[in-house]
Image (tube, rainbow, N blue to C red; front, side):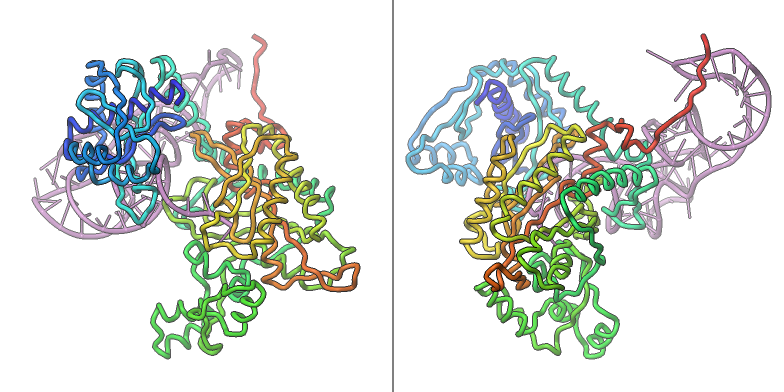
Length: 542
RNA sequence: GCCGGGAUAGCUCAGUGGUAGAGCAACGGUUUCGUAAACCGUAGGUCGUGGGUUCGAAUCCCAUUCCCGGCUCCA
């Protein structure tokens, strides 16, 4: 650990020491350092309050004053179990002990009366924790799994000196002044209305100027790169999404389907329960199931979802993404290899049922407009087209002076069943992304488990004023949806070939991008974006 | 969705059981002085919503909606 991490990690042990002195019945889980401080997850029936936080902080100061030394002790596994039993921290610590692979050192750290299973490292004496502050109490799930018990997490921060701590706290305060939700109100950029709905952005005249300018700017770049503009409706039939695979896999994050009145009436008169109605909307006819399963080469649609045709209600859905609509435009005409790549672009508005607790200003919403495009190309063209897309993202970020971002190559995680498509195509797509990312000239990380269900992707991730990360621009390679929709083009050999699709959105979504942009400029936009271009002030000679 | 905190005038906030307040903004007037907030005045609120306790509720209790922080999630 770095010296700062040691201070923070030690502070979290002091925190645990203080908590056990105040509430001896507490069961401890883990307390690591973080990028900005530290926390400790605890299981305690008593709900901690702000006053408790102050009391814990006072108790921590006592512990620090006692200037306890941190002592490391390595023990065999059997003895570790014994120690955990003896200190009565069995509920979580035994599980944490099991996580340590056989053959690796098992160590405990002791300061004063407090002993904790811990790999270290720590400062030598508690007095070396010179500046700390407890910040907040939050809920967190044991092992990050919402099926597990929810624990109380106490967040704090610590620095090497009081000045640095004060500077950090001041910086936090100042950051709040740049919050896009605050500036959005002050500068009259957008409004969210309770009666319209959570997470639904109303773009006011000022905000609309900002958005329109950004759209004009990217529109110009799209013309240069040979895109075609298209427009598609906000809804589509459920069948469309059953074919694409979005429904019902993502039904929990979609708005409920819209059933037409006649089908609803019919279902009601035959005494259909709500559950039955949902089943009928979600069901797939045998013919479609067979078709999809054949194309994807596996049991994508399981037999339990297959219903007789006359039972199925084919309602509509607010579109959660634009791909199926663009695919249908591509598929509406035969294509020669000479036509490719076909690049279809649209500012497409999509709707997703995000959980209420996840909504956040403009950065996480339920209805948003992607600066979307889908590129249909030959396999040979994939690499070049991905590079073109990345170029577009770079132009956007460079034009707006956004330099503080990271690039993430999202790969499939080996153990998850949520992905569609063959291993061979995944390998090809992942390789294409990896190679494209290498040409970016900026460092990137490869992250298994971050892929979309249909393919790997390259994401541009940016932080907001309080350090939360938001994915903006994205480029995704997709070998799967072309199979699902049986897309083809005629090759030089006069035979049908499968195109590859690239999904890309340089801004990501207009809502999120504007939210981040407001914070980036602290509301002080460059003139070409500024909604208020001129203000006349009376000035005297004196 | 879960844990915790919150909601009083357009905005920022004060008000812990006894007649709803301040500053800024708005509006009217005065002034052309002022320019890192000119002066005087006016209007603006069923205290998020619905129940309950009480002689009496912004204040106490319950429910609910929305917001904030975190967790989970993010095609």
